[in-house]
Image (cartoon, rainbow, N blue to C red; front, side, top):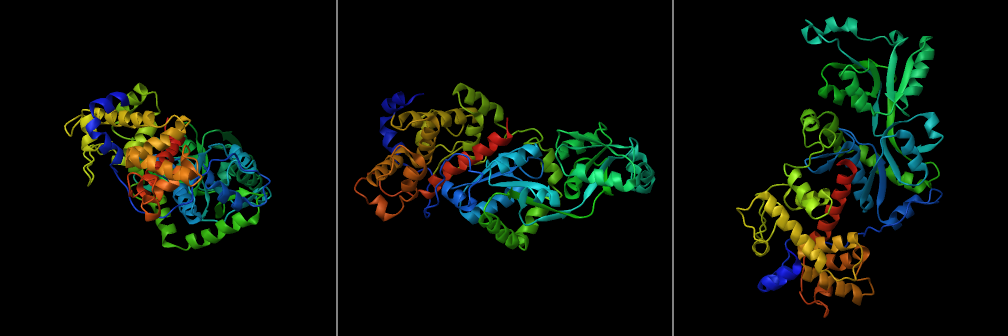
Length: 484
């Protein structure tokens, strides 16, 4: 159902749709995200560049502990810490992913990211090329090996010992498959020299967790992993052993590029010192590395590494997205924001269902509380797209119009028009969302703005609408990172 038909047939509710704020709240202005090109790798002050840009760009890898999606929510050890650091800076976090270590180092040095948030082993050689952040983990490298096929029939754990390598001397002549580009190769070469015999080292494009799984399946005999990662994976694969150390304890840390001014590194280190000493640091570590529920989360079909399923409504969302020639992950992000995929969700203002439609909107799009989830999603998507079409043609570009449409979906298009008029009056661009119209909608709860003569629809608690747009698009970017 397109907007012309809606305006004709439901003119009696048009003003209601324009004015009604489906959700708004008070709040102070926040720093606005500004889109810019890549960082100049030779800049003298990275911290100023980040502040000018208005967002922190970080690079990480994705697996069952560092960065993943679970039931629609971005999670992960590195992600959680990065988000806290970005909050400390008071700017949004943009997260990029890369599974190839060499490519990740290149991205860091070329200025495509501000920080490389990997579990990097701190070594003297690496210090020649990058600057390490204060370490937040100490661990050892361990050998990952499988129990014999009939291991469950063993009378005791001691009976398995004869099948396992416990003395690194017995690695002589063995083949160990490791992640390409990892520090594990250097350590195995040193170990080979120390034992006076050769170890056959094979580098593989798969990451550490994939290689651990290959050991568990019997595809390879041995691999190397950091101990804290190996112990998490031991919960998934009870037939592997991770008790044989192949290194001394080593520091694990993030990195920034070597050419960066020290102000950024000093800022991270000062924050990391405080964070490492906090109770929060222990809680975050335990959440991902000691949590007994980790195995259930990782094996869930709602885990992005396992199955990539966001909700029970993925098939319906994909179908409707195809009908509307849009990305299903965007629709999924909207639904998560509105209801967290709960079809019975109801707000205090009466909004109902997966898409949190107001009663008058449901009536306009011919759905009610007895309608199917598919009908509710279709109605919500049509409503969003109708709002997008209704916007002035002066707002150019699909992404730009989407931000305005999302704001109208949440607060009502009338408040968006008010914010545009305020922007124009204050010498801002009424056709741009970021750092222009969004600021005035955010502040429409203040008398200075909602009492302005150009404002026709009065007070609006714009903080939630501002957050609504930002959080949907931020989550959408996470979905694009990790969900096909």
